[in-house]
Length: 288
Ligand SMILES: NC(=O)c1ccc[n+]([C@@H]2O[C@H](COP(=O)([O-])OP(=O)(O)OC[C@H]3O[C@@H](n4cnc5c(N)ncnc54)[C@H](OP(=O)(O)O)[C@@H]3O)[C@@H](O)[C@H]2O)c1
Image 1 (spheres, rainbow, N blue to C red):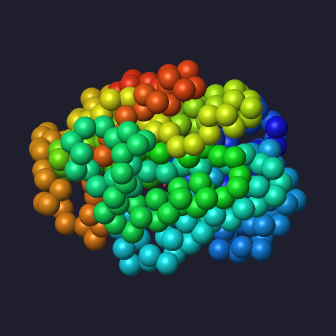
Image 2 (image 1 turned 30 degrees about the vertical axis):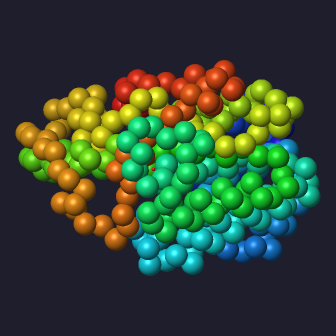
């Protein structure tokens, strides 16, 4: 299988390089060898590689900066997926695209289903929703995997930040009114490999939008506490207290949904791929 991977140096992309390599030849691209703003080069790359599948882990993910860089966010998160879908159809490649829980406004009060109406609160969420629509509108066979609160130990993430704060601050304040599903990038990459192992007939038959994230949900405070509890080098922590805070205590340019947890049961029953509980995945991630 020929796999063309974009965003290969991101949190998810790095993990995908490893998880997908047993499946065939992975051609990985990131901003260092192919800036997606160079549309001609993107088209040439797809035509030259002539992949069986395009896995798009690239994204503009700076949620706050997106508020002032809307054009850039829309280009990477909407126009690029549109281009991938268009070019994939020409070479008959399958597209795997990732999206976000931030397409929702967080007002539902229980985990979101694929059938729930999106209503993004900020530019990042709107641009990702537009990317979903562009992928759907294209003529390529595709899967859109909406995920949430992605972390990795190898890139800057909430997990690496909490570990760092705990070594510098005696008191941590973490919001407990933002709730979603922490998702280890490794889990998502392994799930993607499992999907591709099912074969394209299966994927084409079941193509569409699915929620794929760590099972269960928690607040940022729950998540931070768990990270510190599972920290293998606890003796390095100087933190004495971890206190709940409100999102409104830390004003940010972008408004975030408060309860954006995803219900992933449709994905698990459709593909018979179990998703680990977020705490279990975190336990494994913390042993690295
Ligand atoms: N992170 C989360 O909490 C989260 C939550 C829900 C959904 N998601 C979705 O999950 C997917 C993977 O996210 P992630 O956390 O792995 O993101 P990430 O770490 O930010 O990776 C995205 C990659 O895309 C690259 N990229 C951005 N603009 C580019 C351009 N113009 N040309 C070439 N490459 C470019 C980035 O390069 P640079 O770093 O050099 O800019 C980065 O390597 C995305 O679709 C994201 O929307 C993420």
